[in-house]
Image (spheres, rainbow, N blue to C red):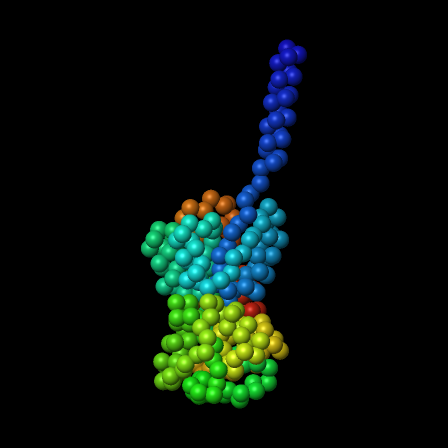
Length: 245
């Protein structure tokens, strides 16, 4: 009896020990670079209400993130700045049931004080104005090209960047006279840039979808996506200038 009891106690201690070492894996979220500020705050809010959760963000151009997912990157949740890119991921059966959670529009960003006196989209077509936009395969680049078409202007950018944060960096570094970015980017940049509004009649809106990846086993993946689309997530997104989907 004593031997059996010792064995049972040993087994119990082993079970308790292995149970205590179990932890939920880090929730890996790939999100469009324009979501950096908002998602960082949303992540902290989510972790505060889900103490067992830990989130690691990977921010970048939506097309590059989708390519990483297609190549097998370990991702639990994907938030894109473009519905078409998300649909490509869904069509490849890498994600399912995306939900639109936010919208954004474009704005012209210039160095502080707008030294080149850029006042409109038409001014971006002037040969003397150095313009930065996103690359054509990136959502912010697609939107910029659509903007120029709607405004009936021909703009020759001096640089095409991999994501909107890179465009903004060129403006802040005073390497260009203007950059086409999102309204939210100008807002979070404060006095580092000056924003030039684009009339609604020619402006271009983008929609942001979010989805959990098909192969994700993280129990917090769906909960995080729901949190983003929920009341608290939407309030944080609104604070950063995002509109409703």
